[in-house]
Length: 213
Image 1 (cartoon, one colour):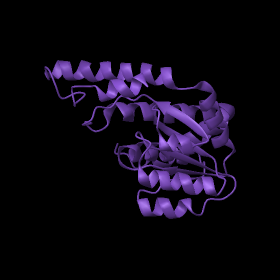
Image 2 (tube, rainbow, N blue to C red):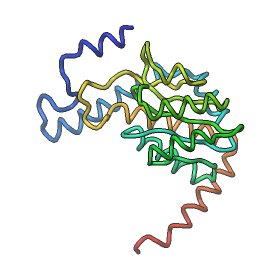
Image 3 (cartoon, rainbow, N blue to C red):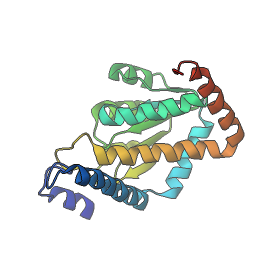
């Protein structure tokens, strides 16, 4: 409750675009913000929920990632990581494709739904379709009392309620979400490190000849 109230009472609408914007202050201001958001992320993240998510993802036949906007960039980052280790996954940029693919989910699939607000209609529709089909939903979303995505999800990986009303590119929430993605990826890799390392080396080698000497 206090998290919600503090956010509502925030007078400064912008997180970064205020005060002394000298280059030095920009550098250390962003660094300080990243340090702060990581501390807050760890404070709200439940280890048992992260472990549940990792186990579900490791056992999944296919992982479907649903996210749009700034959260969509986070979803694509996870998609790239999973693709590098040959984990079957889908992450459509087109929202209509996301929705139609969510209607075709099958037993053994797992959904990762990413929405800072927890109110993104397209993501909610995909998560609802998954629930109807009995497919587990892992949500990455903010801590709040009334969060529709969190209510639908089987596993909730919380990020802090930190963004101001007018977000400058969703900086804080993006960093927090990316941290969760990295934790999931490393957690998935830990049980089979040698095989994961082999696949990462193979995929890196596959594109080495595209680099200029």
